[in-house]
Image 1 (cartoon, rainbow, N blue to C red):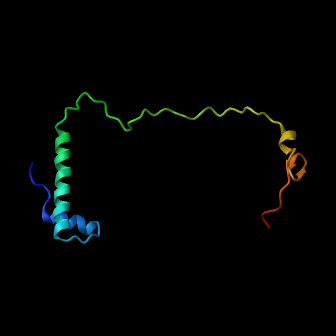
Image 2: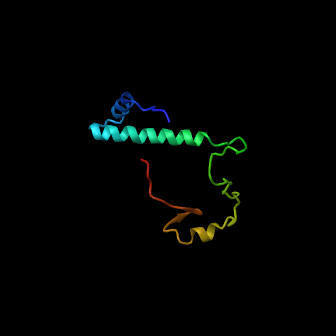
Image 3: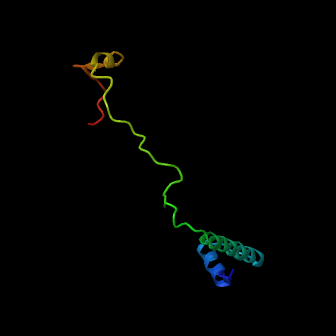
Length: 97
């Protein structure tokens, strides 16, 4: 594979990443980045013309249920444990002056 990662690329990436690399780290980073690009080139060799594009590896189905009222309007049982109630409603302390 051709060399695509230059010393200037390593300098630029290290500036963007705010990294100070010594010579050994620069050399290792250059080698790692070159291997990544080589791998991507290898993936480009695959024939994917009959493969459906996908956005997820798992099928996505709607998991939400219909919004259906099942309990009905049972006001008396809902207010049974209320500390205070007034005219069929919960009575709460005043929150706005």
